[in-house]
Image (cartoon, rainbow, N blue to C red; front, top):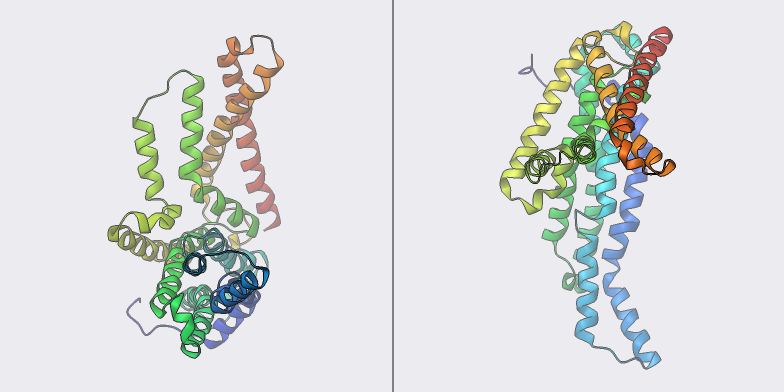
Length: 354
């Protein structure tokens, strides 16, 4: 089936792209004002600053001023800048939620199942729309910067075509694992809220879970000096969010995350094929992972509440640290019960609505 001609469908593509077009425009505007405008006006800004200093009689070093402006442009084209990381994480997640969670919530898949569209066509066009959406804002802004570079030779002092192309490619690359991960949870969940919450939780899971374990071990006096930290660091380095550290780890990381992105998308396709139309609107698409979901939520809540109980009750009681183990156990019991109750309630609530 995967060797057939790619099943592009204009109607499906237009339908999906129409839903996320506002996001594409919004991202393109943000990138324009945070990168393209400062970069393409860098020479004018430099000359204006130069004239301003001369007019006001301020002493300055022209070479230092020029270097400062060059560094500022390079910062604007740094793919690991906070604004780009924020977009690289949030944009793919929101797109996947709209294309999967919202469609399931509105029962759109039920309508599509009565039309002459295969699951392969539906999934492929959603993937294609997502790829276009994460690429387009950066390609448009890159073309503007390249055009400005061609029209003004003075700008070549500050940046080159290579700088722009690398910036564009790196940011698109950073979004790919997040997109694959978001698609995976789009295929696993049946509602918008469930997809958003679970995608977010498991995205930060490597950092959060190891922190919870480490803090709980500390409170029990069982801290291991090095092993957990090493394991945690390795786990985080190869997690989805580790993609932003690729420049610091070499070519093998780029290869790893490209392969990981492909695997995640492939797994998403397999799971999407197994989605049942009648489960759209439920928290989880697959009944056999409900127990795993409830146990996982209960464990995380238990670990979190154990720490919170220690924080709260040690301050309330005199010599409260003597009863730390009691507070931990109470927190585990309350947190575990609360986690199981909330996860079970979420499943039953959405099942009754589905």
